[in-house]
Length: 192
Image 1 (cartoon, rainbow, N blue to C red):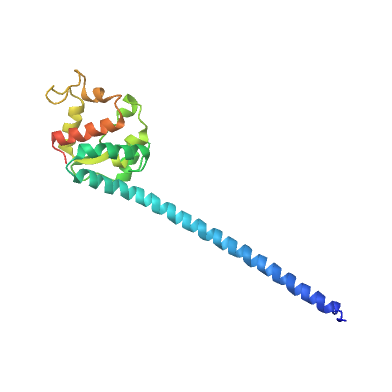
Image 2 (cartoon, rainbow, N blue to C red):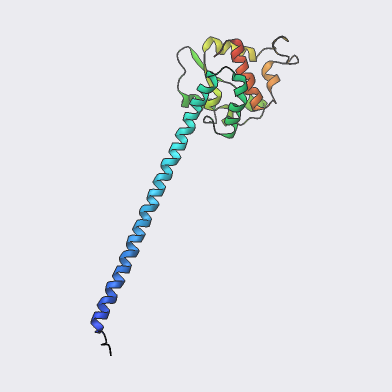
């Protein structure tokens, strides 16, 4: 017959086991907290990486767009990226986007490819108009000529607007179409 264990030894053994369980729970809880903190840090780093990539994409996309020969063909892809939020960074006002971009080079001006006036005329969201990917820096004289063209009724051999002022003729057309026309005007007048 087996000897009965001493109650003191059993109590100490159970206490030892219980302390071990508490230690494991404490360590597990601490490890869970550490894992949670690590996950939060990784998520924050990943989110910042995504934000940086989106901003860099705006710059890279602008270089890709203006570096090629078929700018009008690329305009649709580029404009779609502005609308779906994958290109550039949008702001509520022209002041905020220009502030984000910084001062234009001396003698140059920031130009909206799709005009600011189209927020009201075409009911476009301000964040797609005031988007870093919808802004280009133009020499001041060229910017004035481009703005002048938008305020004119172009001759029929350039574009038939049905006798309308160019910016009014654009009103109601899609953002993609207006973006294409915006690039076309800058190229027509002597832009990039």
